[in-house]
Amino acid sequence: MRFAPVAAALSLVLALQASIGQASDYQADPRAQALVADGNAALETGDTQGAIDAYEAALAIDPGYTHVYLQLAHAARADGLQGKAIHFYREAQERDPENLAAITGEGEALVEKGALSAARENLSRLESLCGETCVETVQLAAAIDRGPPVMTAEAVSPDEAVTQN
Image 1 (cartoon, rainbow, N blue to C red):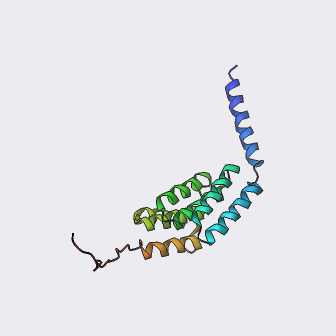
Image 2 (cartoon, rainbow, N blue to C red):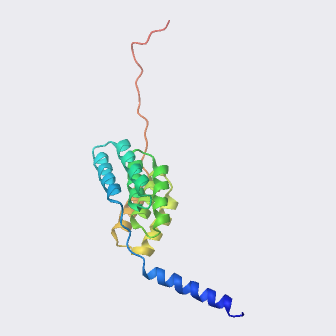
């Protein structure tokens, strides 16, 4: 009677360890992959809404396909929606915490938004994961060095044909 809890805990540990050994690489649904390819083609032609529609359809078919979140984030950034892009990058990181592309993309979107301190946190995380010379670290460091884009207002000259009533 005294050994029942210990035996149950031991069997649980062994079952979990055995299931870890059986894990395999994730295989995305081919239909979702085709929709992602359609979205990529739409994004290349500048049709960001068409790309987003294709990526969302791919997510409906295969919600576990992490790559779709990265593509959605790229499309959101192309549309100038950095906040939405950050959300998608974080979704990808929840599924794969060491996804270097998601960490880099989130850092770049944070820079575009002006949140340099948060982008530097992503940079330090990248440096701890892959070192100072990996492509993602160098890419994010360059984006931080460039800083956020400068927004300027366009000067509009008054219309000279305006008349008073």
